[in-house]
Structure formats: structure tokens, C-alpha cells
Image (cartoon, rainbow, N blue to C red; front, side, top):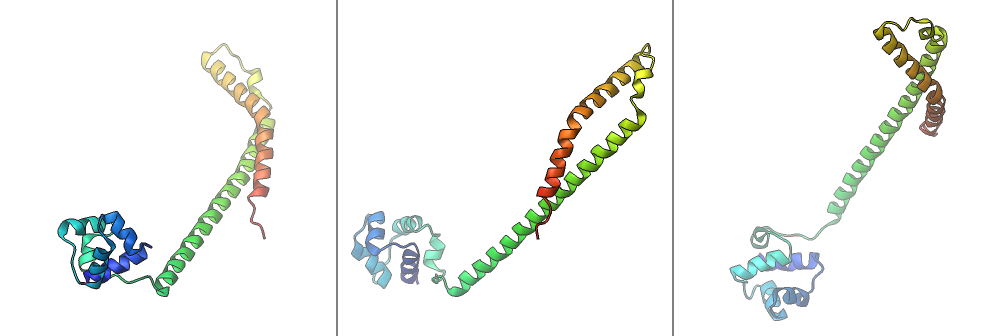
Length: 169
């Protein structure tokens, strides 16, 4: 079993007997004898062999190693197909979320604009002798001033975003 495992793992790693022998600092005939079952590596060599082949010692000693089959490739391709489907679904969900975020941004900007137009800057007639009124009036004025200057750019960006994130048929 050890001989079969050494041979199978060596081949799966794409190594020749000569290449494995060089990595282990032994002659090729030693590797050949291991694979034919004529001799067995000692414990130190077994550890070195497991490190070179990047395989646990338990696999070398007991577990049967089989070369990859078409079923393994089919299973891998099925897993990749599932992963690709999940990634596509996540991408679509992100696109939908972003699309509705852009639509919501447009609606919020339009609603705030309508409210600001409807109330017609009431802070201009307030008596600013009261400190709380003065702070609130100044804050309201700053908000209105910034909104009037930034909202058109945000609205245009959101409208463009709505068109860019729509579902393409």
C-alpha cells in the first residue's frame, strides 16, 4: 500500500522518480525500490517524503490514493456552476438595490425641493433676538443654501444612475 501511494502521489504531483530522488537526496533506484515494494523508507525518510510530496504521512502509510477521475471533474464543474450562479444572483441583487437607491434619491430630492418651495424661506421673517431662533434660522438657511446648490448635481447623478442600473433585456 505504501508503494502504491508513493507512486500515485508522485505522479499526481508531476514528478519523475529522478526528480523525487533529487529532492530527497537519494538515488533514483531507491525511489524505484520503494514503489516496487522491495524496500521501505525509514521514519526520517518517510517524514521527508511526506514534506516533499506535500502529503500527510498517514496518507502515505494507509489511505489508498486514487488518481482523479472524470467523476471528480464533473463534481468540481457542478460546484463551480453553483458558485457562478450564486455570484450572478448577488450581482443582480446589488444592481437592484443600487437601482432603487437611485430612484429613492430622486424622490427625496424632489420632495425636499417641493417642501422648500412651498414654505418659501420662512426664516427670513423671524426675529433673531432669541438665541435659539437665531441658531435654528442660521442652520435652516445653511441647509437651504447647500441643498439648492448641490441638489441639481445629485439629482442628475441619480437619474443617470437609474438608467445605468436598470435591467437590460
